[in-house]
Length: 289
Image (cartoon, rainbow, N blue to C red):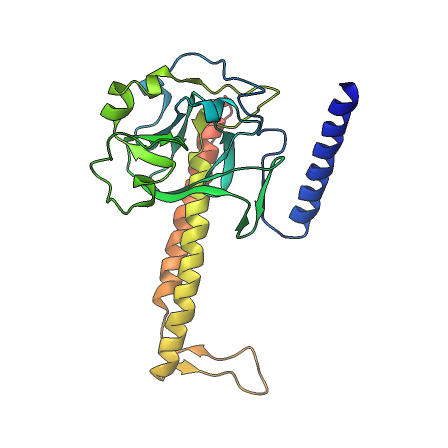
């Protein structure tokens, strides 16, 4: 038995080393090594379902509840699927469990991947991409995301288009009435974070979402800038650089995208300043500005 445990430990260490090498090479590695243990080995033992207190989250944001209903399939899992929000891993969802995340308003990309010894994919390649959808989150709202690989919910979400990625498949957005009255989420137990199955859920990820949104918008504006320059060239509003001075040339009129980029960067700088002020206030520090 000890020899078997030692072999498993050695394999996990090897996989972790491979993941590290791939990450250092610039590849995006999807993995949950050391976090993916399933209910067969580690049943969920947290408290019964209860909503978090209203004063535990900021109404300018939103709350996502994730829950997985009981099935024998899920109860017999050796490894549990990984849940990602905006391409960041937060937890592995085991049988008969629930957890939550406070998120920033906007488009939140939600994906679920099934691991194999903790490894799940690299860059655009996934070993098993179970769910992949975008949820348009609004301030002050609470959303219920139901995961089950064997059965779909008895009711579709009334506000989702039937073709929406979260209105079909294993992960679906369901209405509060269905989640509560059908007795599904209320029968689940809280997904604790412990040594056997650590996770980073049941918390606010608003700052991460805001950073992702900033990078996404900045990337989009940079692409728009290139298109704007090409349009100005076609309109004769662009001067090419001289052969003897390669650093000259450029648009002869101000770029609208440059103004948008400047505005976005200013808003983000103000956001970072506000974060710093809040952190100082919460830590009992001082702030003179």
